Image 1 (cartoon, rainbow, N blue to C red):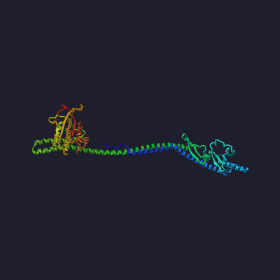
Image 2: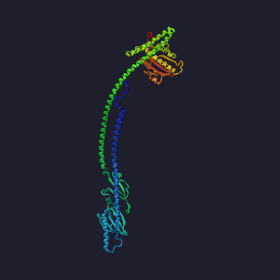
Image 3: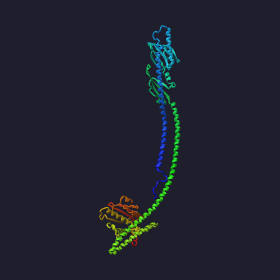
Length: 559
């Protein structure tokens, strides 16, 4: 087996994620920048329109203030005119007796009015009234030129003078001065060059035409309460936004072109980045694969060396374990043989000699197994009596002084037991049941060592063998050998790893159950372990057997 290794050619996942994250962040930044640019283009018209409207409102406010200043200056001039000597000295009551004096006073007043009209083109006409309200003098315009009109004439109503501003000022001699002012002419002086877009409204506008068109429209109040009646007008201005937005449209068109080139360059950059990333990734994968192959070869070399050492160790441990069991039994037989020899009981001593020979045969069989393991040929097998082998193994374990207090109940006596023929090696089959019985005896001794008080029933091990017909006719009958004890039983961990080599719950070499599993599997049977409901452990070994009616007599020398 080889140790698990990372997949060759794959760079570290953290590196891939970091590169991917950086790429995503850069793409997100580029997309955000271009999205902001597109949003700016979309909102530029609205922003520019707002700015243009604000600028238009400021210009209109300047024109309104200029208009108010001209109104104030004109009002001051009219007040000065009403109090000027030529106007104030003009008699409006009884006339002087001197005709020449009358003539000069009138000419002086008429000249003053004509000069005022010539200096103030926004004033359409001026009229002087006596104390009784009768018009005594009228100066107006004919064809745009100032002229003295007949006092009885009425001021002409033309489209230009239809919306005149009319006001009156008292004269020092008791009369009054009436003036009619053209607001349009005055507005042309206040805002030169923007005629046609500025309008004076006598009432506050009730609707905004900008809501239904693309034009820009503002309204600014014009107030002068010194006139009679007071001036409270609105100066409105409306302009098309085409001229104002033309520069923005040109800028937007150029930016859209730049944006298209920007997107193209960004896509090309991303494509080149993907190609470069793939090349770098491939180079990294090749380098990582080369290094990993070298590491794998080195690990394989070390692993093969370790496996060879482990194989030698397992072989040595297995040999020691399997030879140690018969040696312990032989040691026990020698002790009993020594006691019989000391007592002079040669007959009893002689029977232990055969037991010692059996132990030597078991040790020799283990050695032959090792030699057979090194040889590809299989271990030789023969038909042997299963009940006889179990009986020998029970007697061998019961003779151990360490297990003198443990009763092994073998349900079938060798003399009355029905022979069960199994095609197996006699020695390995004996090792199978020897290891299981030894484990049961040691488990019972552990309970006593732990301080538990055990009765005769708790110190017993039950061994039973039955032959059953197999459900599968191709396999033939099977024999089930059940070995149960009243020890502490198996833990969950022990049940999961019981037949694994070198696993032991008591600190032993851990090869006994692994050897049993190998023997049973080699014979085509099954071995299972479980805990009894009444306490203790139970081992079941199922082996294929042949029907006794078709079996031949047991080989000579078999029990």
